Image 1 (tube, helix red, strand yellow):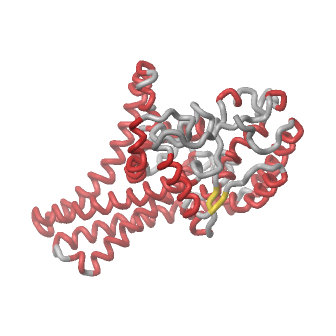
Image 2 (cartoon, rainbow, N blue to C red; image 1 turned 90 degrees about the vertical axis):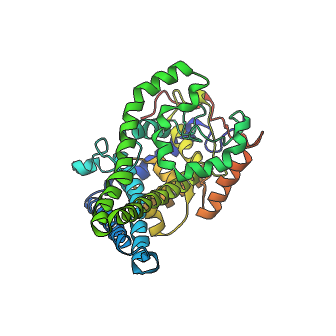
Image 3 (cartoon, helix red, strand yellow; image 1 turned 30 degrees about the vertical axis):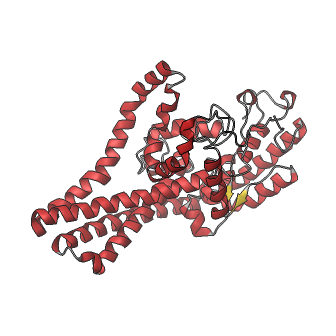
Length: 398
């Protein structure tokens, strides 16, 4: 097993950790009123975009009920603009707001709207399941083989460490389906379906315990986007155009909601996969974790993450997860601060010989697509890397 790049001595690891701690502390000291105004403004922006999208789709649906040829009229453009507005609001709500709030980035405000444990986001995945498999398992055990199930999400073979099976031949088209239905795949992720074959009884017990919560959240999401809003449009459409009007208005809103959800699913899939499964990422053996020093933990975060380059609007739409390295280093720091600390983080990595993986969205996504296709066949790339020897570790990580 090759050695992971970076500091390999106790002194080097301690210096690496100390410098990153200093960056974190400086950034935290600056968090305050500006960040509070930002997150409040973002919340109202998301609500406004969602309201505009839903009302616009409703109006377009009613126009459809009155005139079936509306697609060739200005109302067709209203429907298109509305579904885009709704789709973008879902992207922002999930990534820049929901994900970051649930990491506790705004707990210091003591405002119930930004309380991480209480926030219920616009997603089919329950907040409890998300905090369990993402905040805890993924962020504590980043890319630890056999523990961090976010590496491939239990669905895709992405390295040679995972045994190849004939079913993997279909993983490229399967990945497209997962992308289109990503929020639903995430919603059942914590049930650990893939372990039914290796630990059937324990997995069945886990599913029986967690399924009611997952089913309730998925049902609520499905009713909101797939039932209540289309039903409202159908009722109003019936008043405007009878049964045909009800069908056309309801279908317009239903399809608009579905397409807005698809926009969100595709975007989150691309951003998340480009943050974790590009060329250059590393996996780590489970035995490397117990008793690891803080420097080891920082090292795992950098070597298991990838950044995306882009402008301010691009970073906003990714929830600033385009700075995935900084997010993994400082998950409870307001994400809008990641761009500020990124140059200092990159310089620390350079001095300590730690690769800092960054690139354009197109370039990073092409490496992800290549990884998915390549590992649909036997063989592939081994990603396991050994961390520094046990004597270079300390008994605890603060």
